[in-house]
Image 1 (cartoon, rainbow, N blue to C red):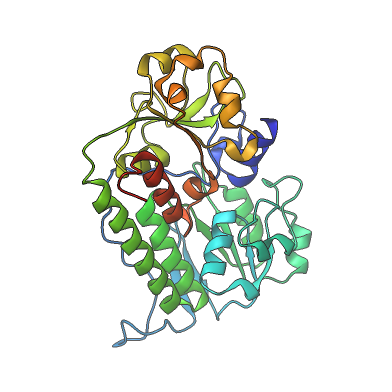
Image 2 (cartoon, one colour; image 1 turned 180 degrees about the vertical axis):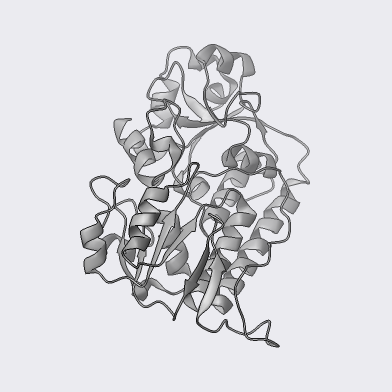
Length: 338
């Protein structure tokens, strides 16, 4: 599980969770304040007067997730992405050929991204400025956090580099960021088409989940380095909200933090009907869960209702988040999503 914790650290580039706190933050994780989707906020970019639906003209000014007004002189041709979620968005918008580098080996989707130069290895919290400068980027997309990594932003901007900070905290924020990237790169039409498609799929899943007649109790495992006290997704976490959206009851809804340890005793008391393995990408298997001391009494274990999931689908704030919601829906309500 050390590999898993390394993955968490690498994918939450420059977030506060990269510090010494023992509570992990899943890769790219963000929070959802409610279980409903609201209309996507109108992106803030400049357009020519009288042409509100036209492709934005350059120079263009956008407001990023750090509330910074960023002016981009011309359509970027050399983009560096310092977060896997941003990399996925760029490729989804057809901008892959303009991406000249990514942060680390965790930028692994789509497959074409794997071969791109890496500018933030071995320490993803400290991008190599010499490598970045040598690539002559005209746009750098990075993630933010609380607190904001002002030192890095200032260093990059001090080198006359254009930086956008993207840190969506909910599904709407992710959709807004897709359109923001579209505006910043001259791909607004593509971004609007993509977000319309994603919102349609999201709405379809949510509408169908509302017809469910049951609400199964679910335990979502984030990290079981210590099987006696596995980490899970609690209230305020994005995964908790997604479970709600697909008609599940999160057994950790009463936890004291978004990412909390859950004792084996409490797990037995809650007795989930379903266990979802968010740490399946890091070697945790159904068999290893079944073999854990004391877990054999759980309803989910007795019924074989233990399901691995690709955690990248539910924790990276990018286009595949809809795939993640659909995957959760199929696990929680297979009678509705076949």
